[in-house]
Image 1 (cartoon, rainbow, N blue to C red):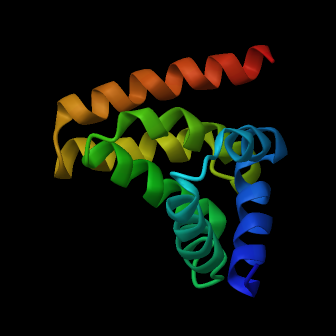
Image 2 (tube, rainbow, N blue to C red):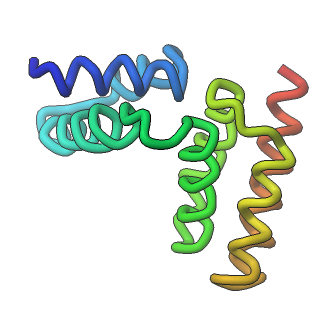
Length: 125
């Protein structure tokens, strides 16, 4: 295991939580191991581990980019991560309002719907 992989796992756990990472690791197979290693080292061990911007800011950017590119399946996971990154519900809404202006109202509308559902689930837990 490389230092970048170890840093990535530490960062991934800090942002997504142990339960999520444990489930993802248990579901990993020989087929997707190389992809999982790449994401752990690149996304989590390099990008998310950087202190160039705060995790709150990175969280907002990630949510906006996911919505703008229509990658809606990842939005609930990253909304849940805001409990650990410091991005508030207001921050989430502001990110999606930017999406509405720069990438389209339908994408922002769907992202807001997903965020509302996820935030309600989080409040009920």
